[in-house]
Image (tube, rainbow, N blue to C red; front, side, top):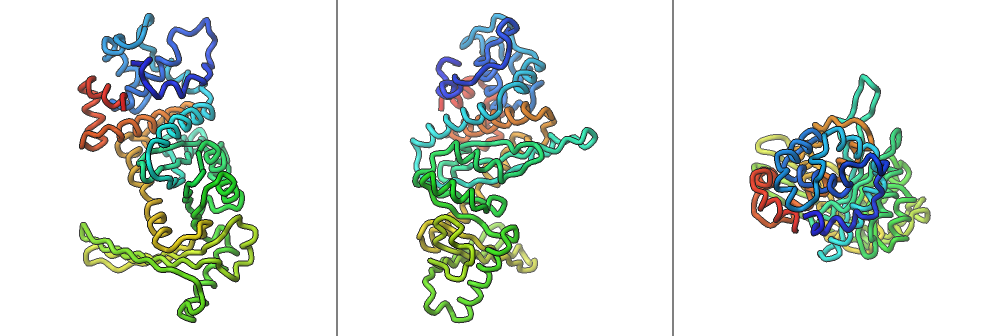
Length: 373
């Protein structure tokens, strides 16, 4: 199996950090066992090693295991020494090659904390990861760990470097609303949609004033477009209205933002059952000259990353419960989880991810089907 796994060719450039004379298990075998184990329900290194021992005969059909299955200490030591930047780059190369065969280039970038990796008693902050989610393809294309004592602003440019941005729309929440990030997207041949909040106070106030002036004149003489969407279901009612102003005037910093061609507003109302109606207004900027319908769909699509990636990682893959606290080991295991999630999602059997993982643990034939996607 290891020789036939398409994903492994994208990891062959990965440098083994161990001394040759102390290698009892190949890097390739360790990676394959880890991926198989995580697909089949393993959530930590002890469970990875247990899966390997219980499936030794099956694994032996596809790979040479003269020294048996590595111990959980071996898995943990290797993942702790493996270069996470190189591992993340290999993962991104594989996903870009896979995604090139699929349609749609909307990339939603969003951060996620891995809460279980924190240790207050040892003053370890939790690992923070920035993910990129291909919304139409339903795939995680890349992940970068924020440096210790740093934040998403430094991680997002490194993540963008791993992506093919030509013709893509990149959507990022307010944490990534930075001029250098917008510039990097444009230089890569893509367009951006950036949510604007008070962290960019001047820009936020200018956009707020822009829409107030336009509303007072009923948008007379203001080039704009409007899109509205109402969703009903599960006792909940949501209404979202989008207004986009093209070539916005009165933004004092517009010239400092590369290709800032539109300013937008999203007004949302939500009511659950007999509860009170709640509303929220958000602003955004964009580089693509497009109508409110385009930006509305992209704005809404961005939040698929929460349900389709973050929720699945925490609920199905128990990422928040992981207590792997060695930073590099935690970052590398996070890549394996996303790799396993992508493979499992792309297998076409109509089951939830949780059921697919359970089925893969019970049935090695089904596990092979997932691996051959």
